[in-house]
Amino acid sequence: MPLSLDHRRALALLWGSLLLCVLAATTGARAAGAQAAPSHAARPASSSGGAVAPGSAKSPRQKSPRQKSPSPTLHGNPKRALVAFQAMQKAYYVQGKGLYTGEPYSYLWPFSQALAATVSMAAIPHLGVSLTRELHARLVGLHDYLDSSNSGAPEGTFASTLPAFDGAVAHPLGPGGAKYYDDNDWLGIELARLYELSRSPSLLAGAETIMAFEMAGWQATPELGCPGGVPFSNESENSQRNTVSTAPAAELGVQLYRITHNASYLQFAEMAYEWVRQCLLQPSGLYADHVNRKGVVEQTLWSYNQGSMIGAGALLFQTTGNPAYLNQARQTAAAALSYFTPERLGSEIASFPSIYFRNLLYLDSITHEPPGPKIAQAYVDYAWGHLRLKNDLFLGGEPPEPQLLTQAAIVQIYALLSSPASSYF
Image (cartoon, rainbow, N blue to C red; front, top):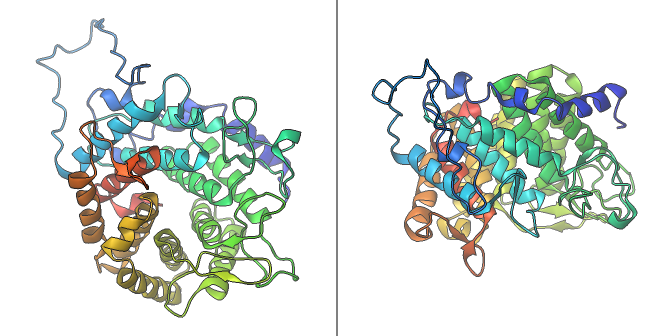
């Protein structure tokens, strides 16, 4: 699906008003009541990872310290979310760049999860901390992954050259390269969440640009085994169509339909959801990872694939009123709760369970059958008690070591447990 002139103009506008994008994001209805001055988490980190001290000059109308309203005292999940978020910013944020550390900057996948963590922090009611600067910084950093064409010779040959976000920081700051459809899904979901907080047109334009990229990637060639689905990447040699690229695209489609009432978004979401059910649903009631060009299914089971289909079913039910979607989401949740034991969840990288929990909690908010909060709470509290270092970074991976992806996942889970499920999508 080629981008229209309007979409291209919208893309240009996306980065023209970043401050306007987030001015209301932490003062809207979901974050109402936060009146305290920005804390360490809301200030740019210094080169040594600490906080930059705010100016000390008082205006004539500034209250004295004794007159100043006290900050809310945080406890439990909100406090732990903030502690983990502050540690993430101190350890991984690159001062003045809007980016996170990597080689030299992180890939888009960890960045997308740090963005999700920041948006989820902003949705915590009465946090007492302004996230405006942090949200602004995430959007500034995100711009460095934006690639309007994938046309550079060093990057390779690609099936799609539509505007979207490269898997690594784009030229000239980074190597650019392939665009991953799942990474762009995660970004689109977060831009739509931010739009719901701020109502900034440029955020909606960004989410719709990503949606255009996803819809244009649909693989309908009859020669394919099980035609349809969204590919893993836009690399010409890509041979996979995945649950993780297709189900979140359905979620984003529903989000955008609710905002714009554009019927094509809902039609795509229903088509994408049904394709995953037809091509990747296993007899166990769980969803396999991907199918190749010949129709051979890779049957590996991951928690985030189940989560994305649970969430897509729940969102489609809310939007269409069709009870089949809700029944299917509940069936997937039951199968996932049985299969994904604490040991299995612990063997995955933390971002997979964080996405699973988010969608499970969202379904729970509709059905009022809440196994999700208890499981998510046990998971993250185990990490707090057994995987947290003295600097509040969390161990993950094999061998276990601190990493941005793990930290962002812990922040997200604690933030989600601190927020109404209506803020998740």
